[in-house]
Image 1 (tube, rainbow, N blue to C red):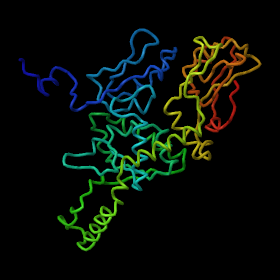
Image 2 (cartoon, rainbow, N blue to C red):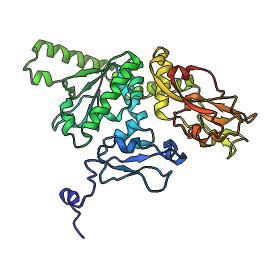
Image 3 (cartoon, rainbow, N blue to C red):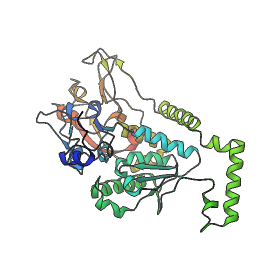
Length: 370
């Protein structure tokens, strides 16, 4: 039997190293605007490795060169159409919530800052690159009043083989944007918290008062005996609380999650698609409506006097923010689903549709008319 090629041989052949990058980046058709006719190329422009390209045929999904992809996750922060086989933004947000529910500060860092021998504490979330998080993600975390800090030496960004300077630029922009929107601050730490050990302070008393170390140990042992420590660290309990909170948030938003029968739609039904970043933003504004005036949005508007209700705009809308009323066939519009792609504006031959600059206050309006 032939011997399997080693790591260095694979690199020499140009093959991807799965042990370094076991996760894969995927493109979700339902969340990409290109199949609907858009010529968006933000993902390719942001990719620091040049791993994203587009086939010759217009309307095709972006193609990812797995040999070039470093799995930095920048594309996830740029566009909802990208996801990872290892973790989604929903999973990540759930983990952050669980850490906060334990009464701990959430500390975010990147792989470049975790050196061999360092065991991050349970409240530390390690990402391939901090640029994988969008402004909307940071905004929701801040409006939830989750104590969150970043532990990273940004001097490492310039030499980072995974994301390079593009990662620092996008990550800084996302954090600064969320802080401006919410009026809240993300903290910074000089060191990554390490994994706790009940006897570490006693075994290594250097720099620690021995009486204080012993007192801390006694407190931890008492917590273990009483079950408090087990309760604080119970993942099952924290997951229950997180699921309940997520269900409450979705109920408050009152979104259309499934297909709706509609005889005026081409396939006999309409299905609205909520993009993850918009959902994050909706949850943030729902929690703190006062931030809405500070959040700019581009959304579509209809000149009802010019509209002849031919529904061409609804047929190209990638999220079905525009759709025919199931009862009358008249054009309806739910601004919460509008991502400002502009396809409806191009499709309207009457010039009745245009993109306008708004704020997130539009998401609070209970108006479903065009």
